[in-house]
Length: 161
Image (cartoon, rainbow, N blue to C red; front, side):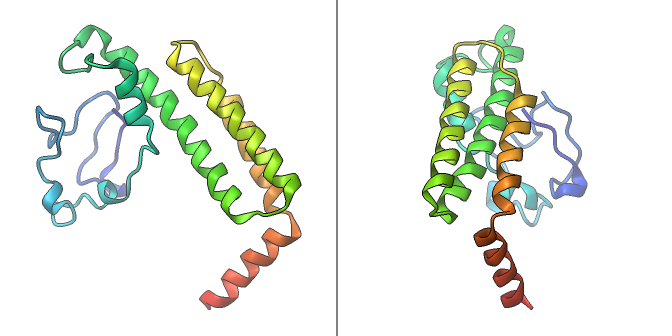
């Protein structure tokens, strides 16, 4: 369970590893029908990028309600998987915008490397998230300097003014 802050649109501050006070026993949100009115704009826009579903499949019936001794392990796996899935989302977004074959290959290769790290998380092995993040951001920063991307960005800025 990730932390969240009231000033980020989550209604109140919540520490990592603690459930939201609105989380029900069936894992459903008790105020989902009126998140905005309750001050939980952040929940409306939050995405785990599929990491929650993947970790749920990984642990099967074990969850932090039914298997308290595995709570730390489940939370740690989710935190690692969430970061890796977020990086994959960024790469998928770039892949959808860039048609250059060389960049397509570089982005797909990085995507495969991140998927291999996800498989390591599933095997309960340690992964270097800092290196994964640094390497992925470095690749995306390089891509951002490509003339076609600069032109897209400039065109987008011009249209929004």
